[in-house]
Amino acid sequence: MEIIGNSIKGIYRDILKGADDNIIYDSGWRSNTIVYRCRMLLAGFMKNDPSSGIQSMAVGQGLKVWDDTGVLEPDPATTTDLVNGYSPPIPVSELDMAYLDEDDSEVTGATNRLQITATLEPGYPAPVSPLTTYPLREFGLFGRFNGTDYMINSIRHPVIHKDESATLIRVIRLYF
Image 1: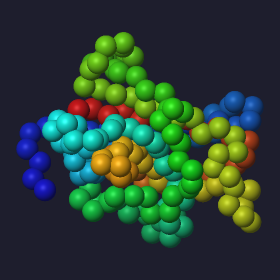
Image 2 (image 1 turned 90 degrees about the vertical axis):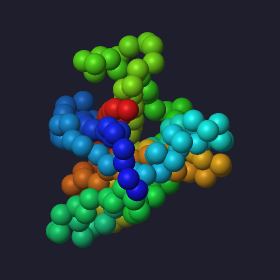
Image 3 (image 1 turned 45 degrees about the vertical axis):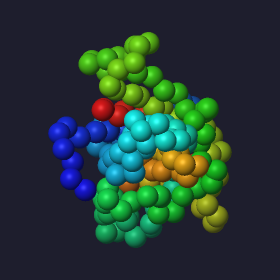
């Protein structure tokens, strides 16, 4: 697919907090991959086809082999889902969304910058037996087109072991 003009860009940041609310891990800001299906959602919206914006955020284990070989970057043209997702995903009603100004400060009016914050509370996702943690290696946002979920972005990252008492705050910024 040929991309004309400026591209849609995205970044994310993960902050893992322990039961005592102390920060265990902070990824800092990192790039994510906007997949082609995001562009299809936008085209559907512009054509007035039945498309919806962000409907959920999915998280997943990815592949354990990524711990040894390094994380394989998603291909924007062919990536349409997580490799090994957790169910249920986080519905849009549980995501905080805000417009951002040019300084990335929250504002009330529409802009070309959107921030999505998901808080993965203690117990979500449930630990994977025999582990006492859930190994997070991937996530993505999903919209809907003609009743089908369409991936918007795909993030694969080094493993984060989230135990039952920890909270993960995941912040995503999309720049259109």
